[in-house]
Length: 386
Ligand code: PSV
Ligand code: MN
Ligand code: MN
Image (cartoon, rainbow, N blue to C red; front, side):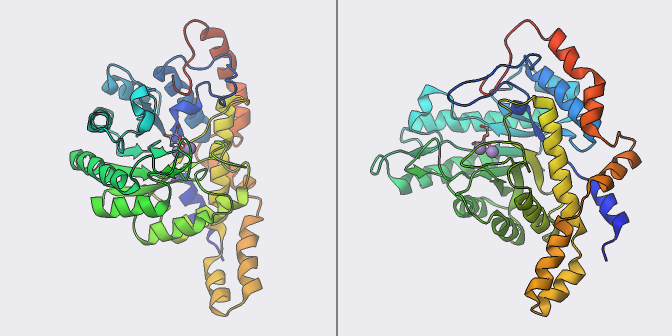
C-alpha cells in the first residue's frame, strides 16, 4: 500500500526550474514565428517565470543562459527575481555563438580560442557568485564534421584541461553539471557525446562535478531510465533538462511525446533516492508555435503528473513480485501506478497549498497574457540567441 499522505507531502516539495530561453521567441533554422507580448529582456523573462510559479507553486527558480541573458548587474537581477517570488537558478554557459567557435570552444585546436572559452566559463562562475546560483551547466557544441578533421584524443585532453580549470574556480557549495549530446551541431564526432564520456570527466574532476541528462540528447530507443539509475547509483546524477522529442533534439514540451518514458525516468529517480534538491529538475524547451507561458505551465504539470505516478508505485508489492520472479505481477504493479489518473490528487495538493486546482485556468483568468501583449510593444523581443 502506498501512503497517500506521504505522496502528497513529497509532491509539495517538488521544484522544477524553468529556462529563461523558453519565454522568448524561438524557432527552427527555417523560421522564427514571433509572438506578441514576448519578453524584451531578462527582466521580463523573470516576470513571466514568476507567473508560472504563482499558478503551479513548483517552479521557484529560473535558469539563465549567458550571454543571452547578459545584464550589467546580476545581483540586481537576483533581487528583481526575489521581489517577484522566484530565484535565479542554474547558469548555462554559451560558448557556441561566436565566429571564433567554428572549430569548437574548449576543445578548439587553437589555444587562444580555448582561452576565450574557458574565460567565459570562469565569468559564468563570477555570475553565480552574484546570483547565488548553485549550478554551472556546461554544454559544448564542440566536435568535428569529418574523419581526420582533428585529433579525437587530443580534443579530450583539451576538454579535461579546461574543465579542470573551471572546476578549481568553483566556490563552496557550487557545482559543475556536464551535459552530453550525441550529435549536432557536429555530425562526425561530438566531444561530449554520451553519459559515459561525461561521467569519465566528472569522475576525474571530483564530487562536485555531475552529469546532466537532457532527455532529447539520445539516439532513438535509448533506455534513458537505465542511465538515470546508473548515474544515481554512482552518485553522479546532477540534474535533468526535460523536454520531448520525436526525432532528434526537438525541445518540445516535457511529457508530451512520451509521458510513459517520463514516468519511467521519475520512477528511477524516486527509487534511487534522487527526488530532492541534490538533483536539479530543469526544463530545456522552446515553444515555437504554441503560446509560451501556458506551454511552460503545461510542461511543469506534466512533470508533476509523472512524479505523482512514480511516487504511487507500490514498492513493497513490486519488490515482492520481482523477488518471486513474477514477471507479469511486477509489470502490473508498475503499470497500475502509471495508469492511475493523478489529476485529482494534484488538484488536492494545490488546494492544500493555497493554489487554484487548475493552473492553466488560473493563468488564463489572471489577465497576464493580455497585459503583456498590450504593454510589451516597443523594443526588440528577446529570443533564442538574443
Ligand atoms: C543543447 O542542445 C542544449 O540542450 C543545451 O542545454 C543548451 O544550453 C540548450 O540546449 C539551449 O541551446
Ligand atoms: Mn539541454
Ligand atoms: Mn538540447
